[in-house]
Image 1 (cartoon, rainbow, N blue to C red):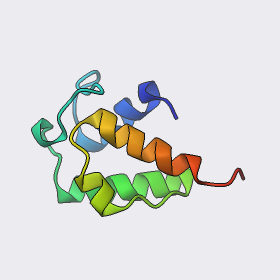
Image 2: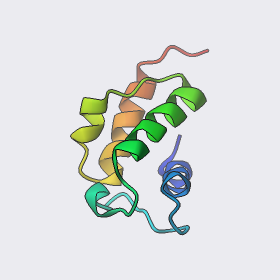
Image 3: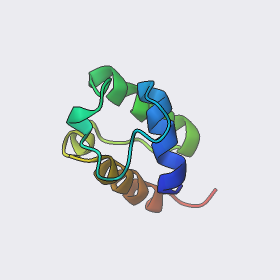
Length: 81
């Protein structure tokens, strides 16, 4: 996964306009970023990549870039299929 692929997915999940999210975007400032969005994100990543993101790890993310890094770190731990 690349940032160019992830940010549009996050925008779609939050129902934001294309290009609304960059790596520097503060999650708390994103309209729609709430507990339901976190649950949806966890489900999306699990469904697409077979990775279970820890809610605590997500809560520690400040920016969309932090969130992307968290996902990348967990993807790196998954054995190749």
